[in-house]
Image (cartoon, rainbow, N blue to C red; front, top):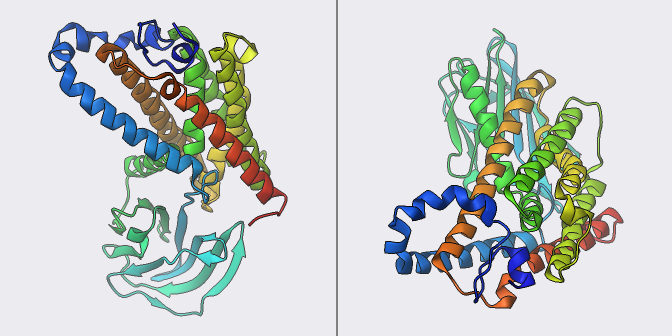
Length: 380
């Protein structure tokens, strides 16, 4: 078996047992019943097209010039009822370069500004505050104009005098929501879980780090230990940072996360050469250490939206659950694709077998240089 196949888990001509095969056996029943073998040629074409799409999307996300850690930051809209039918409004939108995202909240019914808007900037966001009179806000449709033209989300929080709170996540595909009479705890938790899933799915840097770990692990037990270590580590720093006990400056954190990805590139190359190292022998150690950094990144997405302290306990738990759902789904996708490649006996040229490793190393190097330049003020 070639070094490329051993490290990249892709079957090459001549066979060989890929590294992921030990724990990929979970998918064997699908093939043992004969379904896979009967449709092998058709599935081969589907898998080839799927692989090409995945590689294209990952390359675009990883090497796009504007890509930064947690770049898809959410906007945040808060309405707090201070008198019957009167609300203090806080509207926070991300700034890209010198330009604020062109997003504006709109209501379907009576909602009139009774004070001029005050504007300031903080933490890469434009923050506007004003007072809104809306005698019958419940039942109205809240819409974020322009959201459908972006790739960001908007977190909304409406607090009423009676103590009830409505929290929702608006997306480009669903830029509006009806303000509920009263929101259940289940609906609140669901919204934060969705936000967590979206954050990990659209976080190219986090996914590339997880992919790099998957390319290093050698068996099922090591996979479990590695994923568990990464989960435990980022959960610790997510909780610590969200609750306000620690803080990591954004620019140095972004550079450190990029460096964690770059670190995995040479380790994958060592596998190609048949060498070993602490990372290869015990990837869970590296997953835990760098997982602490990634946890601060997750916390930045949660607290950077300006969520009030009263909601952080619920947000912390359910957001973390969403992150874990997205992470596990990604791991299962990689394992399922590896199992499909091996069962379909697709012959891979050596250069393509090494492509994921080169992608991780190149993206890590690019991000490290870019974010270090941003940290040093060389570029904006």
